[in-house]
Length: 395
Ligand SMILES: Nc1ncnc2c1ncn2[C@@H]1O[C@H](COP(=O)(O)OP(=O)(O)OP(=O)(O)O)[C@@H](O)[C@H]1O
Ligand SMILES: [Mg+2]
Image (cartoon, rainbow, N blue to C red):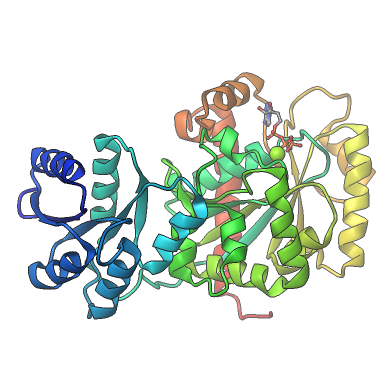
């Protein structure tokens, strides 16, 4: 990248040396400041294309330096990556709040840093103001399992990938299984990422900060992960109980940023889930064709009815539709007294090998029957969302 200027702000000579070497090898022009105050000056005078900012430095620390750089900026916004020694998510969010765009925990591999730099530069850090505000479809869709193990998470993940990768829609997936969220495992992610806990703890969460709390998946979708432990789930539950508006705000911001915000829910019917139900556009009840599941679906449909939702807000998704259960689709429909809206086929090997490899089938083998089945479902979602977005508002 000749002509792309990177400013390194770090007081540690060794780290300076390593970074300068790695950056120059990649072809970047490099300038160096050895403390925060010098960093602020150089950011102003040398107009770098990107800044790597250490956190702990004499004179002015990385947070304060970042804040000063942001405060002095007019129009052009330089991407800043914080180099932090803290794996602690709270500390890292502090950096993001100060105005950094990304952070990386020391010690890091130079290749990872280079990947982050490229991603940030590609995102067009030189655009004016905060990130783009082109209107989105703003559709909020929930995946609600009628029973454990019906494939709720599998369908939520792969639908989100279909929307983002195949249909090129800005898509977010929220893991609302607060205690035992599965997205980290299904997608092979660590525990050290931001999560729902950070999102509900921010008193003035705006679109910019929410965007930074989301974890970008290789497939292009953004994830808001579940709390990293069952104990920290309590923080989210309590926060929702005391201030439901916090959750409303997160969802409203997500609608503004994404065409589709999908939520992988737990089966509980509690305050948190009831709020999600209320705020959503559409609820996909994921089911399989067995007796105990059909019984649950009936109860769920009755509950939704008593909540006063329109029939069209609740849609039935029959997973593993062609698996032999002794109950076929029309049996199931007559037992429920309503139509099943969507069907996803059964393909155990594809589903399980995707799970074990941490690479969802929609990313690795979209052309297989299971992938096609989910893509057809995602395409129908898109069509509904477009129709809803162009209909006169009734909310
Ligand atoms: N269409 C499908 N064909 C074959 N296997 C599937 C299909 N969908 C899901 N599975 C398999 O079913 C199992 C359960 O899936 P998943 O974890 O997505 O369900 P869940 O409803 O989210 O479960 P939990 O109650 O644990 O949250 C997994 O092993 C998954 O690979
Ligand atoms: Mg699940």
